[in-house]
Image (cartoon, chains in turn orange, blue):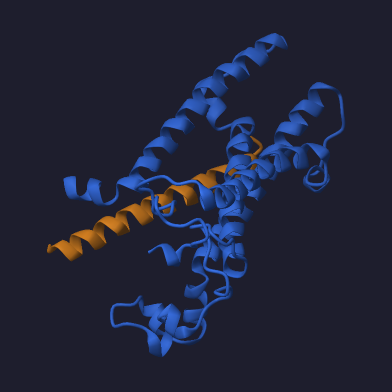
Amino acid sequence: MNETEQDTAGMRVVFWTWMVLIAGGLAVMIVLPLLGR
Amino acid sequence: MRRFLHDNGLSLFFLGLFLAALIGQSLVGHANNNEELVRHGQSAISYGEFVTSSSFLVDVAENWQSEFLQFFLFIFATIWLVQRGSPESKQPGDAGTGSDQEQLVGAAARPDSPSWAQAGGWRQAVYSNSLLLVMGTIFLLSWFAQSLGGVVVANEENAQHGMPVQTWLEYVVSPEFWNRTLQNWQSEFLAVGAMVAFAIYLRQRGSSESKPVGTPHHATSVESD
């Protein structure tokens, strides 16, 4: 992997980490109250 | 790995802070919740029960929604409004969505521009507004989550006091819901407005949120480059 590919991979990891974290958090915060928790 | 940490330090720093603060909130929230339960003659609940309860989730959601609203409005407002002298703003006269040449879209795109910026039609339209769309969607979903958790918590309290059950629609027009909402919004708007105004005259050497120290007060973002 050259430097540009490494940079791109790093940025993708960061972007998707935040996206998955927020999507997962929203799913939990919506589903659990709907289940009456 | 060292290069990864160096190149992505800003987002990783805030990721670490976020996780630490959320765990801290859950730990002290659990302790506080159990103190309240014992005070009311009820038995304490486990940590696992607490972090999956609406009383914890509503507190998380109400802060999420206000933060994402703040950024949604800030991104939207900075398209059309300017603040002379602030590095958070475009220059006076630059208000608006900009030309295709300025935005490097369509025929004006570079070979290494994102593919949806090079494309025309709906893909370019969606990608041109993707940051606002995502921030706005997260705001709406977290505000919806706040309302769902809030009505569960409100009905637990109603049951303890022999009050009738509230529907979701009754809850979202209740003073309780709007009190939780507006107390978060006011602080977000205060901080953003103060940041925009303070950055006209105040500096932080080395920060991308500040003009360079010696930049004149009247200079706005692009001028200071």
